[in-house]
Length: 264
Image (cartoon, rainbow, N blue to C red; front, side):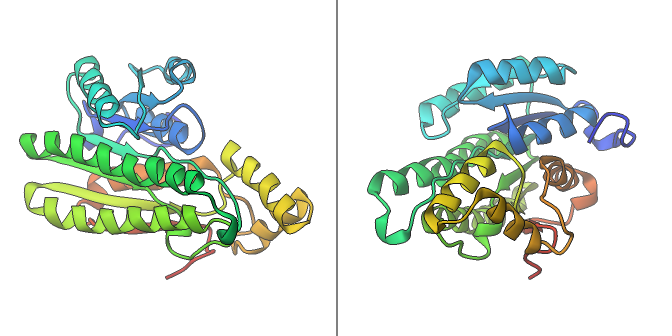
């Protein structure tokens, strides 16, 4: 989405957002799409240098914030820094995520912990810390990035799938608790998105299965009824919708953005 793609939605005027994992990939596309609607964005990422470059390229008052979503103190510090820089926050997109790939019988404790620490604990910490602010101010919107692998268990990604299933469970429960406070909590479930993360996964999967990376990608496309790999912008458009008044009666949802790979 670009600034010229559509007129600004009036409900975004003056809004401020934190997007985690926003230096690149899906997170960057989300930050750009929100900024294109007039939202001032805190580009939060573990890689501060990359976040700083992204914020500069986005412009429109975007700021860079360093955060390690695995650590409560870091999330607290990042939230306070974003709040001070932007003057307020109405939107949280908890997007930071990681993956590794391995057969389930060969998984190590370290691989399991790494995926859960970032993908699940990171959502918990950011949602809880920012959610307390939203409760105090009486409004706010949260969107968590889950995955197609949160709807269907993915071979070679059992630990990743488990972490993303947990994100959906948290999203539903948190949405129920905060609904009466005027806060909506939803999740997006992307499919085969063309990002640097996917590029790494394609190589890992090819090695584990004994096929070529090209064959892996061709399988991804063949499983997608819309006939192409997903782009980060495909996800970002849905996140903007979930943050908008058009989604005002939606909460606790895990919205599939998969090109038809999963339709339930």
